[in-house]
Length: 255
Image (cartoon, rainbow, N blue to C red; front, side, top):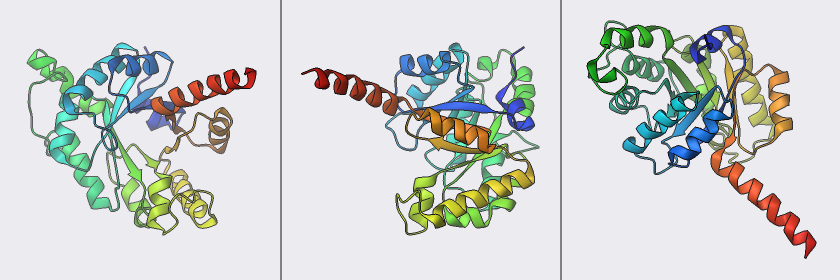
């Protein structure tokens, strides 16, 4: 039996995913079939709607991977709807406090563990076997805190100590912006904040993640060697762009 993402996160073993911003099932399925452990559907910075997201979730599962959804915001109704659509879990953007993280966990789980409303949709096989979904939710649902503000770094130990938080994911661009250093990812203060986050993650044995935005295999290797275990390798749009740019540069050199 294939090991679940929840199990890998719990063991703090390597789980590499990809970022889906193209709202077409073919793109999501291709990513899933590549061998990625998980594929994240981005609702925060795309025009993907919930109906499209459900079809992307289907495609990712059909391709043999696990679908996560990065939310537009920490909205319990949105969490309920993407989970009812069949998502494995959620990545919660711009978390800054432990209470905000607790709110997300509450929205993910049914009572008595959480506060999520109960419905019969795709995730629950439309009511055909609700008990099986309850069991899956209790054991395999995933909740990730996206840490992308200096206040979140300062509160990180409390955030990661919330029961039900499976790991964290750094957002370096927004983190740099919150420090008045927008886009200066190599600035010593930004790097120091990111290293502080990883130190806290290691202390609490919580898997830490980073989005390697450009398809840079060497950077991926370095992150793995550094001990980061929850990594996103590029974005479908960036991979498409860089491959075509490389091909056209090669053609231009022949002219």
